[in-house]
Length: 173
Image (cartoon, rainbow, N blue to C red; front, side, top):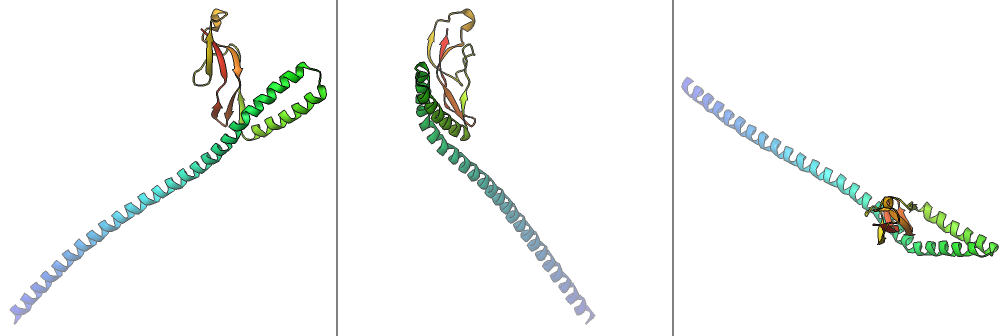
């Protein structure tokens, strides 16, 4: 009888050992599965955060481009006002000149409030193909004006940091 109890005890211990090994394998599998799920969750969360940032940035860009189209459409009107002011200053219609200046200033201020700024280009500035649009080249009247702006034909404008119309210039060669 003692032998049978010892055999039963060995079998019981062996079964417990097998069960413990099975349990350890299961625990390892579940731990690995949890780690994989956690990794997937963190990646998905990071991807979602990037998506939120990207869509908010795209929304801001959309608003900027919408105003850009309106401002770009108004630039010829601004140019016409500038030409009208130049011609009216030549004549003596002082009352009319003041009225046109008032309207021009109001339009100009409104566009500036939307982020529009004139690009300052002066005669003698160095020509930069990324900032200027060369409409023609003429022989430079002086040696020091070669590759420089000789005349500014059209005003350039920026909306925020983006150039929406390049200044038209004549370059000396």
